Structures are given as structure tokens and as C-alpha cells.
Image 1 (tube, rainbow, N blue to C red):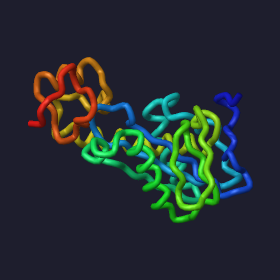
Image 2 (spheres, rainbow, N blue to C red):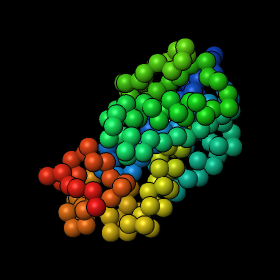
Image 3 (spheres, rainbow, N blue to C red):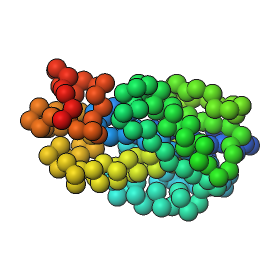
Image 4 (tube, rainbow, N blue to C red):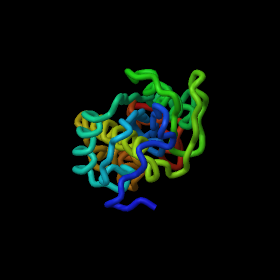
Length: 204
């Protein structure tokens, strides 16, 4: 098992151009779901690159710059709340990953995905890995990019709607976030197909 001083393997398929993919924001009540795809060079090694949930915000942002500088290719994409409501969050998460792969400047030969669900992308073989963001550096790198870009987005829309505390909760279903929805109603950034409160609200 990798530790904080032992770098994660660069990819699940070391002899291929392997794109690691992960998403951020799947369980949120508000905001898009983001996903990233990252192809790392075979000699990449950094013991700090790990599952984004295990890192501080400051460390994630530091690693984001490093990953973007050193990756062979990287891309971030999103699916907005209205589309999430139309196709459901699982399909939206996979669509965000497909969009990120679409945007890569290097075409991968294999795709490694965090989790256990994915839809085939073109004719490129793929594998899913439960807790892959803690097992492979390219998936961990994707988790860091997806998380940091999504957090940045939520902090920006927080300035439009400060009553929901998105700078702190990032759209996740905290008690304070649900209380704000009760007090102020839902916004265009909320996912109306999710259980925002006990009884669904009308968009104001």
C-alpha cells in the first residue's frame, strides 16, 4: 500500500498512454459535476500526489500547478445542474469524464477510471478501479484537478449567492446549506432532481 512517502504508480497500464479520470461534486445539491482526465509521463514521481480528499486545499492547489506543468496532457470538463437533472448524476459524471477526454491534446491508448461505473469511450479500452484515486497517480492527479476547479467555481458563484455558504460547503448537503434552501429557496445552480429538503422546492 502506498504511503505519504511512497509515490503511487504512475498509471494502471504503464506501457500505454493511460488517461486517469475522476469526478468531483457528484453528491452535491448545487453546482456542476466536474471531471478531469490526466496523462502523466512514465517518469512522473511525486509522493504528495494522492486522493484529493486526503489533501488540504492549499496542498491541492500547489499540486494542481505541478500536475498541469508536468502532465503530457490534461483537461477538465463539467456538466451543469440542468443537464444533471435531465440525465441523472451517474450519467452526468460519466459525460463529464467523456468531455474531459474529448479535450485532451493527446489521444490516450487506455482509460483508467476511479469507481466502478463507466461507459465506453470511442474504441479506447478502459478499466474501473474502486478507490483508484488512492492507487494510481494519474487518477489521483485527475481527482486533484477536478476538485480544485470545482471548488474555484463554487467560490465564484458563492459571491452571487452568499447566503448558501458555498465557499465553505462547496454545494454539499450540510445542515447549514439545507437550512439556507428552506430560508431562501433554490437557485438556478441547485439540482432540482435531488432531495434539497424534505419536500422539493419551486425554483425562485
